[in-house]
Amino acid sequence: MQRLGGLWLLWRRPPAAGVAAKGLGLREVASGVSPPGSTSPRALNIFDRDLKRKQKNWAARQPEPMRFDYLKEEVGSQIADRVYDITRNFSLALDVGCGRGYIAQHLNKETVGKFFQVDIAENALKNTLEMEIPTVSVLADEEFLPFKENTFDLVVSSLSLHWVNDLPRALEQIHYVLKPDGVFIGAMFGGDTLYELRCSLQLAETEREGGFSPHVSPFTAVNDLGHLLGRAGFNTLTVDTDEIQVNYPGMFELMEDLQGMGESNCAWNRKALLHRDTMLAAAAVYREMYRNEDGSVPATYQIYYMIGWKYHDSQARPAERGSATVSFGELGKINNLMSQGKKSQ
Image (tube, rainbow, N blue to C red; front, side, top):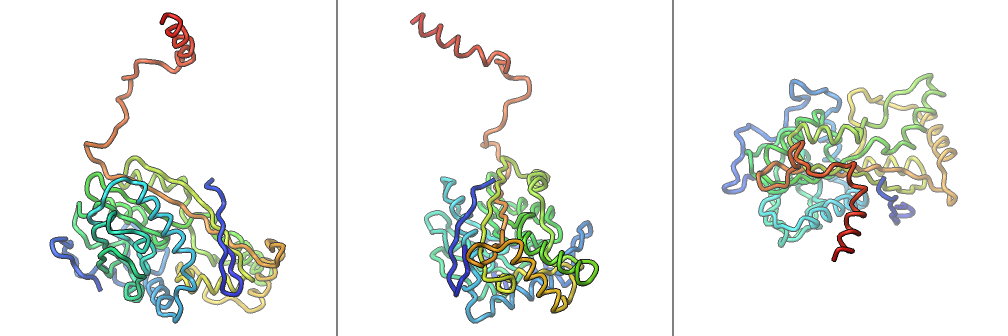
């Protein structure tokens, strides 16, 4: 994907205030949005959720928010493709951290009967994209879903869960609101996302200021993701990775787009201010280390896609341990047995 004069060219590397619907049943909570600074007792308080709400609201209020939608629309379409791969109809679906509706716009009413969209930012819900399926907007925090158990046939989430303080709790709540044999399909940024920007800022800040602070938020490792899904109760798991590379005229254009996406850093330990000469040095380091032949600079977005199912008796299960009738040591004899059988015929 290339951003030059308002034009984006995309390529990908190979994979290595809420309204309650009638009869839906909301859990008895005062509000789906957590109070500022609140987290569950066991959670690490890494991100300022109130600041993230403000960042997303600011981005949704911009005159042309679609200028910065290119990445989220691409990932939203990839999740929609995974929904279409499952040959069934979903009467009730939920999008956790929907933003402006990047998944729903790619779905049709033959696949999804009704779609609930949850986000922490009210301005994003007010400016959702056009879609053909009936939708209900719910203002709620991804960490505190205000729905009853066994409500939805399908839950999706795109590029939102990397900002929650308690990812295990968020996955457990998604599992809780799914019906038995329901499926969760999600995507979140991976650990190699924006490694070029992270490295350039660290080198420049170390050289100019004698040390560095984190300027890119921490991300979940892919080895931990399957474990977290399993711990939340999901089975028949699928986790795969993809990389999308976007070319920008320079580092400052990249940072402008991140702000327009609502993806600015909101970690509590972020540094409030970077000196001007440090920023200029970082831009020079970025260009020197990663510049393309045409003068642009790349930014890598690593995406983790995940699929998990809620248990139901009808699902296929592995055979009991010790129930095999053929050992692996005898597999090499299969060809001989088959050839003997053909001769006897």
